[in-house]
Image 1: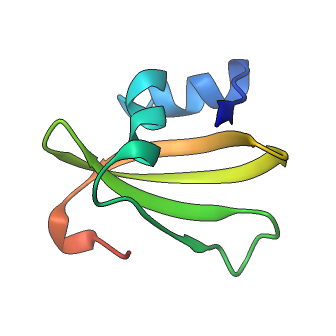
Image 2: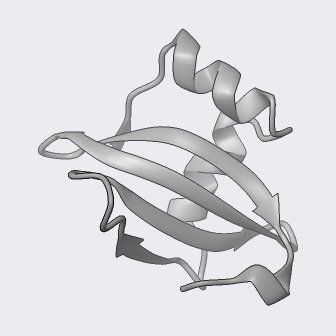
Length: 82
């Protein structure tokens, strides 16, 4: 899996206190789950636990094996969707 990063999406996750490595690690979490965003075409919402914290990320597919994470943030367990 390849991740596409630019200044825009890096700044977006950093303002939520998440680094690139943590956002990418969500995809490899044991409890990883995702669902399509019904409001935006080619966008999905995913959740997973990394180092004991639950994260929600929004992403889109950019090329056959590519992922562009648009935002990522820590959430409480009671706000879990997937």
